[in-house]
Image 1 (spheres, rainbow, N blue to C red):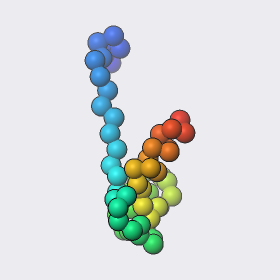
Image 2: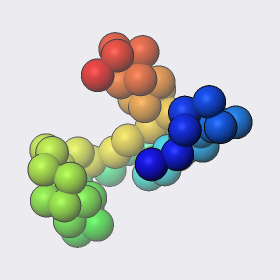
Image 3: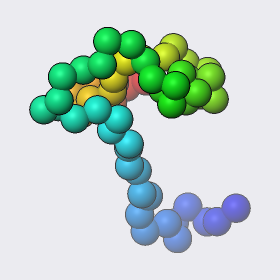
Length: 60
């Protein structure tokens, strides 16, 4: 493990699966269902920038 005082930055990024300009899908895609299984979450039809911002702001 590195000495924490040596850390300069931490890269945090997200992957938005749905455009905020496109109409949301009615049901989760096969890819969304696969991600839900992998991450042990509920499958969602869409994840938008506002969804991710709200989740991040909630502090979970």
